[in-house]
Length: 79
Image (cartoon, rainbow, N blue to C red):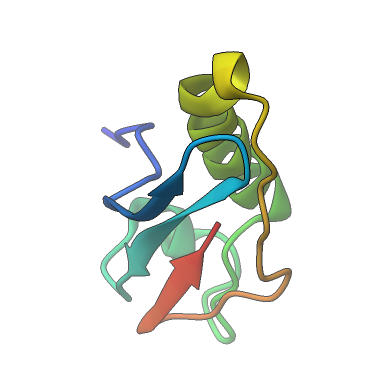
């Protein structure tokens, strides 16, 4: 079963200016089984979900979220 918390660590939290978080993307992630077996790519909808999760944490603070659009296995995803 896939877990849907897509933020592993908040790396920067500046009230009013922004925040950054990371997702450690491992080849063992469930979504790589089907997306795509020969060239695993993190589905864009999950990247957006991770952005939404950190944004939900920061919503009341009016912060800005930055992200990296292309994510492959064994990469840290900043959001």
